[in-house]
Image 1 (cartoon, rainbow, N blue to C red):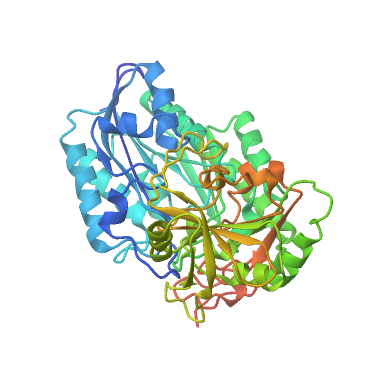
Image 2: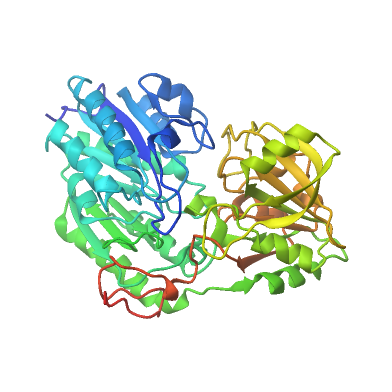
Length: 510
C-alpha cells in the first residue's frame, strides 16, 4: 500500500548493471559481477552504502537525495560488470534470485528504487532489465512504486516502461550526471509516494545513432537535451531521451522517448513534442571517423609548437562498449608513421603485464603484444619493449565523470616500443578498463598534458577529462568489436524498418 506521505517511508534500493554488446567476443559470467574493477564488487545489504559512497553513480545520488527526506533505505544488492557480450544465464539467474530474495525478505515496503543500465542482453532474454523488473513486480505487486534510473545508452523496451513506475535517464554523454539522475529518480519516487499516479508515454525512433555521434557536447544532441529540460520546466512531471546502444542485436534496440505526467494528455503531448524534434534532427547527426594513418599524421602536425596533446580516440576498441581493448591497429599506425611523444592506454594483455613485472623496470624483452582475443583478422604486435614503470592498478579517479572511483585493475606496466624511429609508449594491463580519466596515465608516472599524442581506448567518455587539455580530438576508425559505422553491421534480430544510422540503409530482416 502507498504511505500517506513521503516521510518515514521504507524504500528498498538496489542495482544490477551491464551494457551488452552482442557482437563482442567474451560473455559476462557471474565472476565478473563479483569483481571490484572500475566499479565496486557485488555487495549485499548494509555494505552497499559504504561501497558506493562518494562515487558519481546513480544509486549514490539516490541515497544522497532520499536520506534528507526522511526515508528509511533498505539496501538489497548492487553489482556491475564491464561491458561485454551476453550476460550468462547462470549469472543472470543467480543475481536476480539474490535481488528478489532480499526484496521478499525486506519486510513491508512503500517503494523500490533500482539502478539499472537499460542495455543488458542475457543468453536467454533479449531484455535483461525488462525481465528483472517483471520479477521484481512479481515480488512487490502492482501497488508499490518502482522507480528506475537508466543509462543514456539504454535500449528502452515496452517491458521496462510497463513494469517501472518511472524511468529517469542520463542526459549527458560523457555521463557526468549519473548521480544527478539518481537524485531525479528519487524525486519521481517521492511524487508516487505522495499519491500521484503518473501516466506514461513512450516513443521508439526509426533510426539508430552510433556512439561517437551521441556526444551531448555537440549538436543536435545539445539542443535535444535542452528541449528535455524545457519540457519539464513547462510542467511535465518527467521527460527523458535515451539514445540507445547500437551494438545490441535485439528487436527493441535504439532511441526512445519517455514522458510522465498525472495528466495522460500532457504526457503524450510532451512525448510527441520531443519525438518530433528528434525526427527533425536526424540529418544533423554526423560521423567524422578518420583511418588510423590519416589520424596519426594529422596528430603529428602538432609535434611542433606545443598547445596540448592531440587525443586519438580508438573508438571501436573501447572496452566501455564491450570491445576487447587489445587490438593494435592504432598502435601499429603510430609506430609505422614515426610518431613521437605518443602514449597509448589501456591495452589489455595480462600476460605481457605479468611479464613486465617479472623482468622489472629497465629491462627489455621481445614479445607478441595484444591481438589475442580471437577477433577475425586481428593479430598481435610483435616487437621489442622496454619496461619504464610498473603499477598495481590501484588508483583514484578525479575527473568529472569518474570522480571518487577507486580502481582495482591488477598489474599494469608502461612499455616503450624499441622498434624503428618512433617514440611510442603503451600502458598495458590485465583488466579491461576504459581510458576515460587522466589518473590512468599518472598511475604509471605519465603526465597527460605533457604528451604530444594520447591514444585512448574510449569512444566519448574520455572527453570529460581529456578535452580540456587537448589541442585537438580525433576519432579513429581502427579495428575493434564496437562498430561505429552501422551500415555494415550484421544485424539479425533488429525490428524491420529501422535505419542503420541517421539516413542510413533500412534493415529489412531478410
